[in-house]
Length: 426
Ligand code: PSV
Ligand code: MN
Image 1: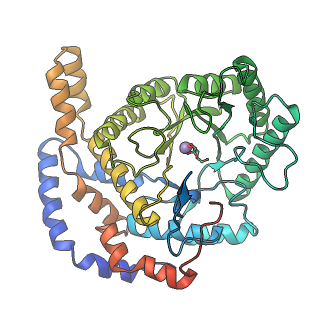
Image 2 (image 1 turned 180 degrees about the vertical axis):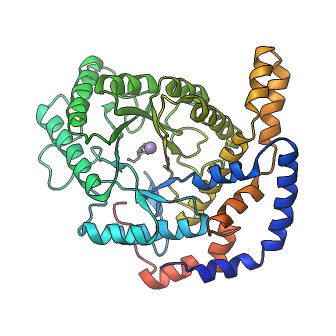
């Protein structure tokens, strides 16, 4: 399904006068405080977040999966779902595919569908954490780190194949997340596992087209619970440095031990020019993949503060690739993604309000109280009218969740696809 412009205009009629008065008030306040509203709006309008193809169906837990009606059953329908998100929010202008779950059968048809929704192909993701029916070697004991050379070679070949698929779609980056690790002390030789991983990544890197980037994720545990080969940002950075200039670390918010200072990691990576990408989600305990901003919105704001500082002060760091990496096993996946997109934009907008000059001055004067006041003043500002305006300027809706419901989008998807349609790949 596609949401046409008339429906968008129709659904905006109801909230427009309320929006206008809220926006006028905020705009006057911010202008008085020295902000340029048009600059803020332009930054918000330009900020686009990729949607992972695997977040469009209901996610599972290891105890079960409760499907959601009208899930996209093939790649075409997944792109349509991102198209719906993008029409409403105007902030989801890209899709990130996972291979082999999303191998296109007809490349030009797939590109055409994406084009019709104004969607581009973001990073492609390889999968060496599951065995495929057709593969001869097993990843049971690892992929790029495996002690078995044939398994490593198979995993390297898969990543090279993923690059080729992405290249045909116009993607410009490969994201590697490895499940490799050990469940028990003594099971694996840490040095051999790391060295094998470095060598394998270098083999993949050699085949990367010149205008591509390699993103290396890290994660402290799960599915292996004693050790993970790429366990932290330092290991990822080391591997990226070993590969070369086109290799970067990717920060996934859920891939840290509790209470890790992620904004400090972001700052370090950007100073070194090595923060390539970002996966948004939220968590209470581990890699919970909850809706962005649903548990720790202030932490998200502090991370954005570090990101905004880096984007303004670190020309050595490329513009990071933004993606949501969350899975939804209770909510309607599209509603959940709308909430995540809103939370990301909100944290970004608040971080843009931080008076960096004043903060630097307060830091230099060791005025700790003032430093906190500056950050919290920005955080406490209700920026929602700014987000609404940015969406309206690009042709989106004022309230995406309200419009999604009043336009009966899920009902339409169910009638088109059937109640029992299950997302492919999950
Ligand atoms: C597994 O933890 C994971 O969430 C990684 O973050 C990847 O980005 C994603 O799955 C898809 O493989
Ligand atoms: Mn991730």
